[in-house]
Length: 212
Image 1 (tube, rainbow, N blue to C red):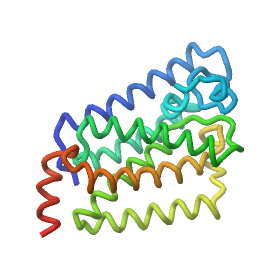
Image 2: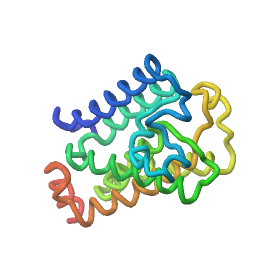
Image 3: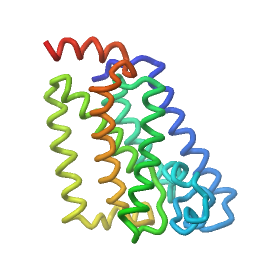
Image 4: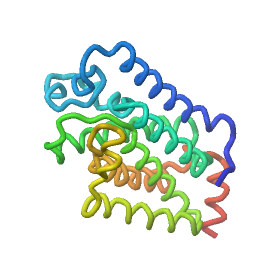
């Protein structure tokens, strides 16, 4: 933890900057509602071939509070797991999470007609880092995994997230959190066992020590 290089911060900055540009665009130039925005996930328009929405929706936000909360989450993930990610691996994970979450929503959550926000992707990045921490036999990895599971169970079966919904002015898409976490766990496992060379040298060194 907290053993990252400057180059490992760039991908996080790029994601934050894209989110900032889109919220500024919507706040100042957007002439339509958020639901019909050019970059939001919209089930009906995906059917007409507007495939870019499966990526761009995750960088859009409903209001400033929504944006700030997710940027804070992104910053915390950089502190937690920034050391494990190369710029290339981070970019690939982001793209796969965006596409995977959107497709899961399309297939298994037909009640969600439109969606915006980075939170599903953040859950995926978090889960990805947790897998690596566990493989390195760090106790924090197990604690974070338990926390993630408890949060997902609470969201799916108990929590209404009413306060958060009022704050960000849209319903919290808890299904996106679940899909993101599952995809992140899968990506983490694949990274560790099949593509360890895509991870920083500090990880591969620690990996050898963990497997002794």
